[in-house]
Image (cartoon, rainbow over all chains, first blue to last red; front, side):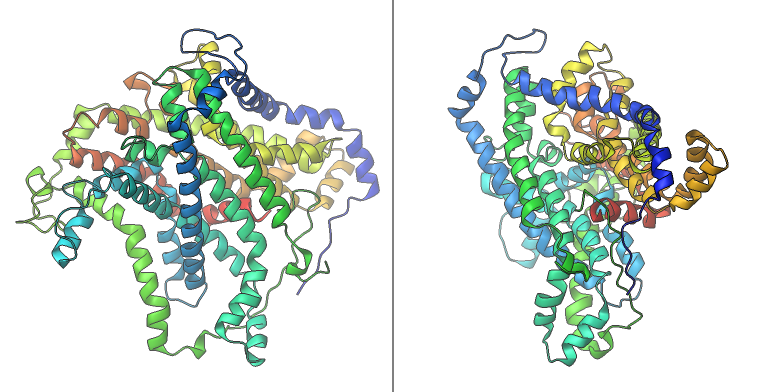
Length: 310
Length: 299
């Protein structure tokens, strides 16, 4: 077990560095220009647009909270909020469960381990839209391969209407999202698992710990920091998901699968109501902030998890 | 997620073999191999389905009674031919490639300087800037695309490749900078100090000392950024209108899907060919992918 501390800058070097503030700012310039122009400014502009009645082709005027008041009375918007939370919650739990399971499997001694690891990451590498198209075909109302297989097995008698029925559609898009998200969770958690020394497990089992106890009192605590970060990313990307829904259902049937991102797109771009679309997008920000703060303060990395003192 | 002062993680390693030898074979089959097989099957099946559909003749595509859907009897290249010679697909591939390469190059260049400045020049305020870069990475495209559409329109680059080349760096620069900061951190200060003593300028140090040592990091960030821009969808959908400027994901979805009659064969061929470039890139650089993915998470 090696222990290293923060790399200390020698003093002389620090002095030279301090005189280089101008150089530092100069080096920052390209990135700063891009991020200010295309990230910070749009973020501010988005908040501003939410307070205006801008439409495509016409600059709007300030209308205060009217967009938000309209949204508060809009049952489709509340449906989208409910769907987004439901979608994020269920998909994240499933991704975490299956991802952790897969990571634990891959952490064992297996033949062709690196091959399996490479294969498993594929769903995450391939463009989401293109794999969603494959799911669209798999979920086809008439020629779904899943329906066909289940009918052959005699479990069902007529094809499942995967994307036509509201609840089926929700389950189907969640399944596709989980399919795409498992690899990221599994491979990240695997990297965390590999830093847990086997000797801890050996010591614990000499003391008579069962497999479950070793998982509960060694693996899980050591893994918590990585879990926190991975799940924050996963929740953020699931919450703001757009592509899967847009390909599979476009928000239908009867708005049953609209997420806030797809509703924002539909109202803003094809619908032309830029102001209203921006307001829906801005409504996502509190949720995002809440989840970032939750993971930052609630699940921070603790020193004891890395062998130090708290 | 220690965004503030980075302490090198206490590396715990040992050479223990683990206790897997204690598990007998039948138990390993039930606990390990069976679930693994199910996982691999579920994760890979959509790709198999994509590939098999792309080469199936139309007559077999929907006839599940006379032909087993899992196999193809007389594979055909008709769908692929149609895709390559009768649609704008090759043009979309080319657009995607151009946009991805330009956006990646632009982002990498900007990120190298930014990461070096934050991590090594340590100008006053470099810590908060590093934190802001991380937060910028968490800003999702789905809340930016409407205002960005307005901006892109005002700049007069709406419906051009430039619109995508300039907007993709919004998510690529934060990611690449964050990743490269980690790599630069691992390069010893002493190398830079001795170069400074020898009279090298900051620029020379960056080009001659730091960059050659950070090549693995550059490759990781580069291929990852390339993949992210290849896969990007919402900006491309919003900012591009004309068929000849579309990228593969947008083109396949908006132009190959027509009405109620789905050309599943050519649709799946389009999905397959659009995935191949990143899959091939990925297969050559698996370890770099894994390190950049886990690297971004571990910090």
